[in-house]
Amino acid sequence: MDTLLCCCLCLLALLVVSCSTAGASAAGSGRCVRQGKAAYAPSLSPLPQGGGSCGYGAMAAEINGGFLAAGGPRQHRGGLGCGRCFQMRCRDARLCSRRGVRVVLTDFHRSNRTDFLLGGPAFAGLAKPGMAHQLKGHLSVDYKRIPCDYKDKNLSILVEEGSKRPSSLVVKLLYQGGQTDILAVDVAPVGSSEWRFMTRVHGPVWSTDRAPAGPLQFRAVVTGGYDGKWVWAEQEVLPEDWRPGQVYDTGVRIADVARDDGACRGCASSSGSLEWR
Ligand SMILES: *[C@@H]1O[C@H](CO)[C@@H](O)[C@H](O)[C@H]1NC(C)=O
Ligand SMILES: *[C@@H]1O[C@H](CO)[C@@H](O)[C@H](O)[C@H]1NC(C)=O
View 1 (cartoon, helix red, strand yellow):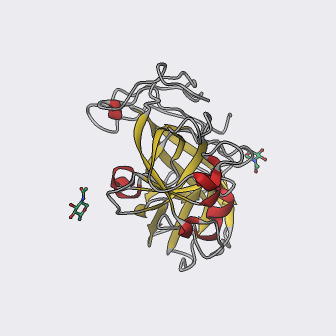
View 2: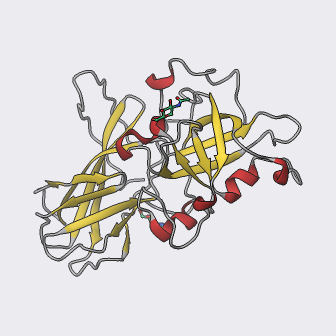
């Protein structure tokens, strides 16, 4: 993890920022279990032309083994919710497996009848073996945000179609692990400290029309719980002749977990009393 450097950063006056080079430990705090509804949505099947409003496109299918969900307004948060991972299980003891499924948000919906719409594999995965065909309608579910775990993937950068060398650069961040939000992304030539900020277009997509000439390095402000820190990919991420449509590995893995979840107020239960694996 020596490419993962970190320094103190004050994101907001209110934030107390800690400084550590290791990811926060996976202590169970901040895993608020909520109750809500989930329903099946055929359009979330991991088809190549799908991909949802987070803009993952065909990649959505491989992001989480096809276990995809669309979140409602509460999960959307201006696109910040894209790529978040949830564990959920339905509550009918006769039909529902105790473990439930792990899903990643790749899309959003506006229905106020349900919190989540689930693609086929995820919806079926809620059931006990052989019971999937009996799951119908809007199911009552327990759910909690969990760290995303992309086992053999580093944080990666997809250069979006429409980018144009040298200065027009639109990137999508893929495989954002842990239980984190990315609040800022900067780009600079390798070996320089002339960082230029990128602007969030939506969800995981960031752009600038002032990109320096490559090769390029990146840094991002990542938060988990109350902490914010810079994560640096201080090496060549994009080569000089970067190309739209290509995915580039940052060599950095994000695995931080929320230490505390201020948003937990009003949830059904805090961790501990309704923990499951
Ligand atoms: C759902 O949303 C629609 C339109 O936004 C509204 O008219 C309706 O009352 C809402 N239903 C419930 C149950 O909140
Ligand atoms: C992730 O990055 C590290 C370097 O930081 C590299 O050694 C490793 O091969 C990368 N993993 C993958 C799957 O590309």
